Image (tube, rainbow, N blue to C red; front, top):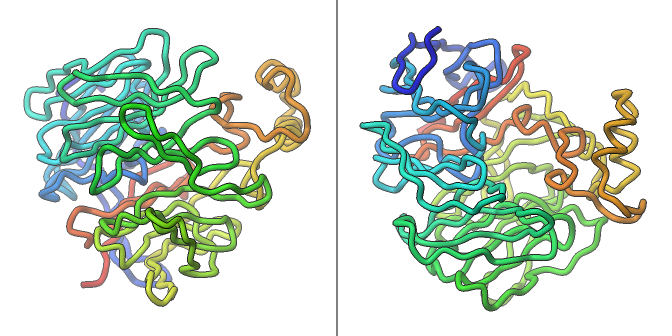
Length: 388
């Protein structure tokens, strides 16, 4: 098909109505391969709403594509060469460039010229998803370098970068919406929620909890500055950033969560059972069904309401008759009481595969929701319209 940077392909857009809510659902991709939107902590839309970003393996590796104008415009390939980190892209606030990870480097892609600029590179490291702060001045990403875990943080112009170590795997680092001096991140496994200053000082655990309290997918509750998180699959909760007091928003199954800017609603998908995509009112806890997801939501860990331990990992691999691979990938010295990290064991059987999860997120005007679903056999990108 002539895959290369700048190549354009015909629209794959189609429309249908959700069978339960009647909402208008746009199917954006249809290639027989893995296709998904950017991660649920980032919007897949440019700020003006004219363009939708997605990742596809249609060329044989994870590369970045866009649909413009949304929803039925042509598909343009934005990257080629070595695979990008498939959940790393973050669109700059002005919308003209995209930051993404390739191995141990963060790059900036100019959407007009498709020129790439290396912002920073950490030799021998693997970086995770990007997160922007301070109006795009600052960047952070999870990092793993040999046996060392942590986060990297610095300016998007390439200056003031440093590696901040942490004794366990780190995922989902995010800048505080009002104070980019602070970065909240998840330590994997429990206890989950931590924060550190951008210069590496002030490291502290925000919430001490055990392996039986499955805290996941914490993020900032819009511009309120507080945190919102799930105790899966039982509750959606809020934590005051200053006092660390906790409050229950709703007793419900909420999985991946994305608040609106005002912090008045939380968008979520659901799992075990998958009941669809919902909006949760943070004042009342009421849920409203948006549409069905139809995703397979794979991953053996989601059969339980606690973090994965060694026996979960072994059981999952045995189900697939891959005992030898399990022995090769299990961390040395792990006991049955030690929780495992999906990043450390480098497998999709415990927490993944991620592309089978909906990972819903808002458009910038909060009138649409993008999500992934493998309802057709392969993950495709969908957008559902919200009621006015």
